[in-house]
Amino acid sequence: MKRQRAWFLVVFLFGVAASGGTEPKRAQSAHVWEKVEIVLHAGKQYDNPYTEVTVWVDLKGPGFERRCYGFWDGHDVFRVRVMATVPGTWTWKSGSRPADPGLEGIGGSFTAVDWTETQKQENPCRRGMIRPSTSGRAFQYADGTPYFLVGDTWWATPTFRFRWRDDDVLRPMGPEAGFKEFVAYRRKQEFNCVAVLAALPNWANDDQPATLKTPDGTVLRAAWSQAGTKSAKTMTDEAGNTAFLLPGKVPGYERYFPDLQRINPAYFQSMDKKIDYLNAQGFVPFIEVARRDIGQAWQKFYPWPQSYSRYIQYIWSRYQANVCLFSPIHFDSSGATIPAADWNAAANQVIDDYGPPPFGTLAGTNPTGSSLRNWGHVDKARWLGFHQIGNLRTHDSYALLTEIFQTNPPVPAINGEPYYDGMEDAAGGTEEAGFYCRSAMYGSVLSGGLGGHIYGAGGWIGKPWGGGIWSGEVEEASPCPMWKAFQWPSAGQMRHLKSFILSEGRRYQDLIPCTDQLAPNKAGKPKSAYGWAYSAKTASRDLFLLYFEKDCPQATLSGAQPDAKYQTRWFNPRTGQWSTPDAASVSANASGQLVLPPFPGEGTTAKTDWALKLAVAGDR
Image (cartoon, rainbow, N blue to C red; front, side, top):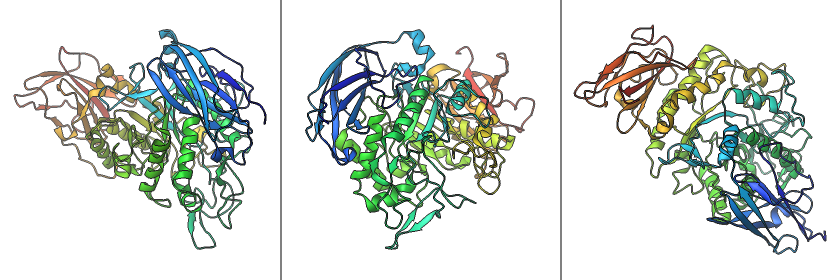
């Protein structure tokens, strides 16, 4: 390994990106927010470059000076992915630990130019990284354009279950559909985010039980398991690559648990193509680095938290120049894993050792209930840039978002893993499942989840386990292969949520939850999606957005402007249609209380769910 040279490559994210292993060409220019890849070749040999070598470049540009870390990508190759945040001249110089003549002291420069407004309209990712809004409680692109997250859960994206084809011929939605077909389908439905698990290291079709016991008596969660499953699911890429290499270090199960300190770059090179393609199609990937069921083995058999922190940084440095969101762990349950505090310690260690992501990528995490309750706020979880609730499927969980809304300093929040179409004994794709989905959509946002909402499909569709999108079900004989679940009506109704919330432009970013000013607001059972109502208002009380689940009674609203006249417009969350602009108005009394109008064509009890907008007359 005598080569001591650097290659400099601009990867164009808004076409099809160059794949890993492609010999790059020299380039001198790039667009703002476009990935620029610096490729270095080590001059020394290492037993395990992943754990033995740290590489970086010090990047300087107008108003910017940061150290940007890179990653090992197989053989003698190290890559550092950077981007320009503003137009101008950008320079870089490399370094490494330990010192290596092929990795340190190499420099270069490039010129960045801005995208035109037309180009930004073609692909919103050209507007830059996702940032908190001015209020702190919603998202926006770096150029200030609102970003209301409309997401879907594709946890197995890096694997063969979301089949990658190099051609751009789109197949019909059916057994032959793969990753690009699913992206195109959701893009037409106005989705703009996909939640991804970077690695599922202990999911393999090994015919082992879900819980294993090592020779010393340690009980480990070995594989994904739900009702009716006896072994884990295969989670390799299309070429059979796994994220980590075998054999592993768990005594007695070396060929089932991989070696978590031996990265397999080929797997992540496959993932690169999909992440770049998502950006090219205007999607923001939400990348969670691993699922919590690997925690016990990782902590017991590898240095903790250093080994896991190193892996978090590997993923974050690999995708730091993609327009995306990060997460250090998919903590969907506190069962069969290590304590939340230990995961938090590992994530905080990343900030201590490497600093936050250099281009401002925000990090949140899928929680068991509430990330605020799992980790604490930003003073305790120093890596955290936005909060989530999740994995609680009924409407009694939405108040956790109001609790997050009240934190200081404010951060954006979403419901990141809500009710999945097909759970709670509602058959997938049915109107009953749709009620649950829409309750989660509107109830979560109006309770304070102003960042947006993530959808899910697939669940306990009867027994046994019924498949769907989030588990990456591809077997045609299963109760629900995911290409069928993709077509359930509830997903198409996500775009209506965005239409309703953004109907007054960016004003939604300043909404304040005020469900307690609706009476009644909890006429239904707690563990359901029926009979509850939600409300949010602006501080000036000139705008209210409300949502009523099925079976809600006609309600009274307090806290309005005294003696003010409000124009009312009903919104159908199933079709996205508004009532006519000249719909009836209502007036508040001297105390700011008003009686809301009856439900459209249904009288004083809602036979289905409805949304409502109140705006001070003449102020719209």
